[in-house]
Amino acid sequence: MSEDIAPEIVLSLEIDDPALADRLAALLGNIAGLRLANPGEKAAATIVTRDPRIMPDDIALTQRELDVLALMAEGGSNKMIARQLNISVHTVKFHVGSLLDKLDATGRTDAVAHAARRGVIEL
Amino acid sequence: MSEDIAPEIVLSLEIDDPALADRLAALLGNIAGLRLANPGEKAAATIVTRDPRIMPDDIALTQRELDVLALMAEGGSNKMIARQLNISVHTVKFHVGSLLDKLDATGRTDAVAHAARRGVIEL
DNA sequence: TGCGAAACTGGCCGGATGGCCAGGAAAACG
DNA sequence: CGTTTTCCTGGCCATCCGGCCAGTTTCGCA
Image (cartoon, rainbow over all chains, first blue to last red; front, side, top):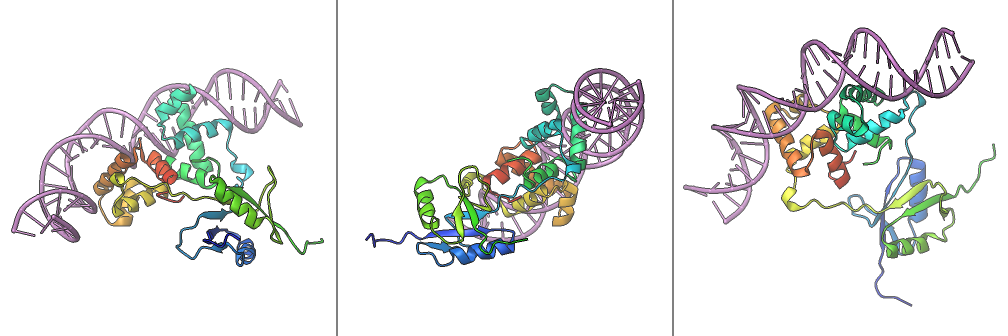
């Protein structure tokens, strides 16, 4: 009988789907040694949905665009990216333009943010 | 269409701390309507640890810098940010400069990426 | 009361960025 | 073979970005 301390594990929920969130909350609501976090409370762990938001086919990124995008996320300038990929700055600009278009972004920063949100890249 | 009455929720664990992972696995192991994912199995949700990588005090961001940073992450240009915050473009540049310095970033895109990685902002 | 930090503003300028134009080369596919 | 897609390159140019200089105001705190 280890009746010493009750190391209650606090879990927080970050689930978009309301139905799933409700079911999880109901299942986890009354388990000994486990508790759901109150709003604002810091939790030991978080339950999240790992839904890789799927990219519509019509805005699928080409391999080269993914290459450029990855280097953009590392803070690389067009010149640096060009050197990395052994292509000209013009070509980098071309791919960046396509990325801005496909990701519906206003600039390279927005493009990286959008891509990260969609799970296309991992920061 | 025969729909299951008891749609088992499959959860996967992504916990670094072995002790915490074990305790969670034990607690969640025998709950009706809930199951832990087998290796490779895709889960409805994932339990992760949210370690908010703490920002060293010497590079703590001021409130205004956080304001600017948030708008940067939305893809805002200096001009747009200036309008949003009712300050001049010069002031925005001033804060952006501080952010690049504190976040050790080469540009605004890199700054947003760094901030997101450190958990300073949420994309 | 004085001092420092934060916020704010300005000018200047080299370089980066993004949009537009126009093409060429190679591979896949019907 | 012709067509499409992807990748690649160039020029031109308006705008944006970021770094440098210098300044004022406001606020909290010693």
